[in-house]
Length: 308
Image: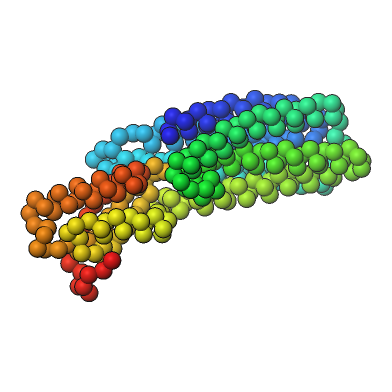
């Protein structure tokens, strides 16, 4: 997964770098604020690809004494910085330039340059977007869930690329609409309005990515239905009377910690049998949920009697 994610990020980064240069030149030559806003968007996305590549590289560091569960959380930290980059560089510049253009509008010129750049940018952004979407769909099929459900829990780098590229495609449509409206009506204010709309779009993307990565950094459990399935697997094991408490924590998109307090049948689980039981439970849970990398059983008598 990590290698495929790195390829997705590299493709997005290369596309954004080339597109940013083309948009910037076309925006300066034409005077289009909306196109300059899209150029700022692409510059922010390019910087974000650096953050995401850093996240993928650093998260692969092996566990050590100070970080016994590894560095998987690094992915969420750097992805959070990417969300901040979208907000500050992309949304901030777009809205500021849009407001300036509304107050003091300037004519949009050289449309023969503007439209080809918009079309080429849409094609390159579309290629990057398709790769991210295909990866999400492929991983969703493997997990037996819908692509939308998987996207909520997907690898942060791929999720960020998918959101960025989706926003880029929508932003290009908005920019084209604003430029066309300005050209047809002679009211240059539409170009500035398009720039503001692009900024608002980027605020929405930044907020969504920031919120999701913050939740992971704080410590987010698996979905309730998944926890119920894990609880059922543990509870079915011979020698376990009931699962008193189950706690899960996402350490990375493909790494989960599970801790279960269980009530054991003292007559059947003594000495070496407890160790064998723990090994069996670990195998059965991992067979059903490969992302569970750490599973710990805590034998605790249930003061209220057996549970499920």
